[in-house]
Image (cartoon, rainbow, N blue to C red; front, side, top):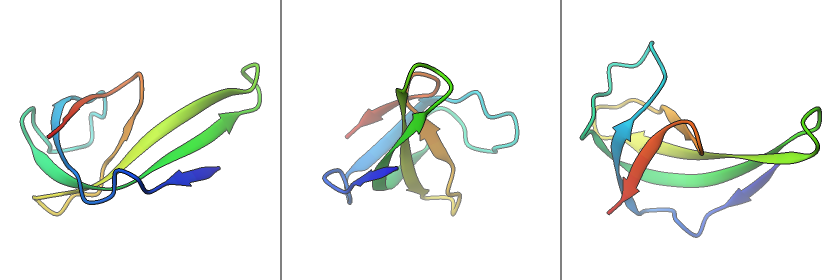
Amino acid sequence: MAIDRSLQGRRVRLDSTTDDHTALQRGAEGTVRYYRWSHAWNDDDAAQGTLCVDWDDGSTLALIDGVDAWVLL
């Protein structure tokens, strides 16, 4: 796992998420903590990225690259 803090402090807006357990709606905004890369060793060593966000409503839902959609502001 690798942590990239180059986006730390940037604002982000949620476009969509597949997480059925979150109260976050499209248009929710938050602040990026970091971007995390993880290897899926069972999938031809493909990397999976996760954007870790502190949402304005207090949620800490992380967004999965290629699954969830967001816009950096």
